[in-house]
Image (tube, rainbow, N blue to C red; front, top):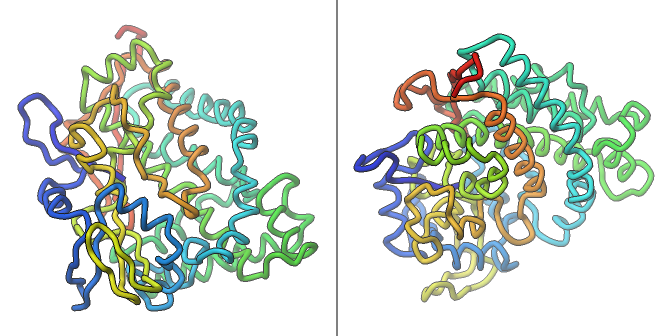
Length: 409
C-alpha cells in the first residue's frame, strides 16, 4: 500500500502503520534491480511506479508460472493452492468475469443505503455504550464482514467461524503451520457445503451466480468455485478491516488535518485516495516483499534486460512512494492532488475487483465517525497502540478511542 515519514512538525517518526525509512531508502536506489532472496536465489525487484505499471499490464510476466515454481507461496497457508490471482489470461479472464459482475459499479452503488444502515447501527451501539470504545472490534471488522457476507450470500451467523479460519490461514508464523493448513481445509469444506445446492444460496448473491455458472453454464468446476469464494471471503474483509483502523489512526495522528475533515465531512471521499496510498497493510520490514511473477521471455525494463524465466517481485507499496510520481511522497497530506495515482488496488488485468466496494466502506465509516462522534481522538498515545505480528497483514489489535459524549467538541 504506501508509506510515511513526517508526522508531527519537526518529528522524525517511524509510525507502525507505515514503511520504515530504511526500507524506503532501499527502494529508491533503483526502480529495477537484481536482489538476493531469502532462499539464496535471485529475483528482480521492481519499485518504480512506471515500471510497476508496465509489469502488471504485460502478459510476458506470468503469475501462474510464479505459483507453479513456488515463488512467494510459502508465506502462509492461504497460498498453498492457486487462487484467481495466480492465473493468467485467458483463464484469469474466465474466472474473474462472474466475480466482476458482482462487484460492478451498479451493484456497489445499489448497496450503499444498506451499508449506511449497517454502519449507523454499529456506530449507534458504540455511541450508546459511551466512551471509550474499541473501534477495531466494534466497527472495523464488523462492517466489512457484514458486507462481504451480504455480497457472497454467506450466513452472517457463521462469521465467527470463518473469521477464525481466516486468521489462521493468513498467518505466516503466528500459529503452527499444521493448524493453518487444517483451517484452510475446514474453510474450503465449509464453502463447498454452502455451494452444494443452488437453492440454498440467496438470490442475487455471488455464491448463487457462481453455482449457476458451475451447474447450468459449465463455466466453472467445483474446485474453481471454492477457490473463488475462498479468496473473496478472506480478501473481502481482512484488507478493508485493517485499512479502516490504520487509516483512521493516520488521520487522528494529524490533528490539524483531521480537524479540517471534522469541520466538513463532505471532504471524506476526496481524501480516501491519500489514505489508500499512504497506509500500509503488509508488515513492510522486508524491502523485497511484493507480487511474484516469472518472465516468459527476455524483457527490457528500466534500462535492464530481465532474462526469460526470471523471478520478478513487484512492490506496489514502493510505487506508491515513488518521488517521480508523487510530490513529497513521504508526507501524509489529505489535500494531496496526485493521490489517485496510487496502485494500492493493483493495476492491469488483476486490479482488485473490490476496489469500489472498499472505497465505499471507508467513506461511509469515516463519514459516520466524523458526524456522530464530536472530538473523536485516540484514547492512548499513538506509539502505545498494539499491532498484530506473524500475519500477512499487519493490523491493529485494538483501536481505543474516546470522544465528547455531551455533544461538545
